[in-house]
Image 1 (cartoon, rainbow, N blue to C red):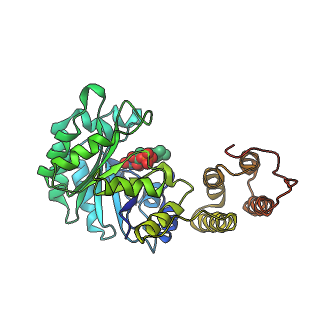
Image 2: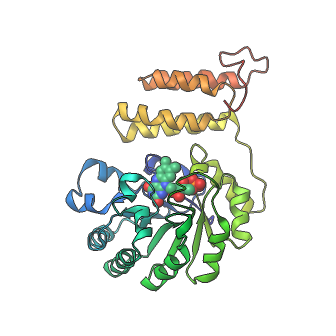
Length: 330
Ligand SMILES: Cc1cc2nc3c(=O)[nH]c(=O)nc-3n(C[C@H](O)[C@H](O)[C@H](O)COP(=O)(O)O)c2cc1C
């Protein structure tokens, strides 16, 4: 099993996409973050149930919770663990979104170490599953205290920590600080999963080989790119990464589309597939044009037909196809 995980990504890593990544070799994935309070108040609410689906062939799935009240988080974790569906519970201490962090949830926990301690300690006691935590390097430049948080997590019984090498105020700007991730790895005995800006399999595995982290996690680099996990496996087996042939890309987009249609109402599937198609086609000649077209179409058959037409054109050398005349990376 590759030591490269799929990151939790709201609006992206649902069970359909996680299953596709698993088929390409991803061994560990997370649910999108789920509100502990939301779950306790309405565990059967359709949106929550959807987030909690475990795909049939998902090898290892960790459910991620966020919340600000340690008792509420621990209670939700206990009930969810008792369902017997998941392999672990992860505590979100990294979400930078204003409405989350400013109310003390997600990265807001990086401002309240006492509360973070209680949340971790109580959750560890409430569940029989391994509990992990995902955090940022700190709140801002002036408060980079991930080492203290990591030591505290270890003390609380947290089994592994993921560190996204940015502060909350950085959001997604600048570059992830891998040196601090390496420093945390030196200071704690529990596994450290490094995260931030990994967009190719080779670099991801180098981070592990170079001692920055025990495992790594890929987020944005896996959007529309499940092949990154296949490449990780290939490199781990001593093989070279493989370029993705247009025919293979076409096959996976179609498969993804069909599985989305089978898993939710048509209008929702069509809407959600628009962004995936944009990611899958990113960098291909004519991609911006087809993206505009796809965003106008509400009929899945028409969208799939357009994609077939697009891919039929990718084999053309004379650039006279309907999508010719654009530069790559558009
Ligand atoms: C669209 C999007 C949604 C995200 N949702 C979550 C989430 O639900 N839980 C979480 O812990 N992190 C979430 N993150 C953060 C990622 O898991 C990851 O830490 C971050 O993107 C950095 O990794 P990357 O550079 O590989 O993308 C999200 C990030 C993005 C871009």
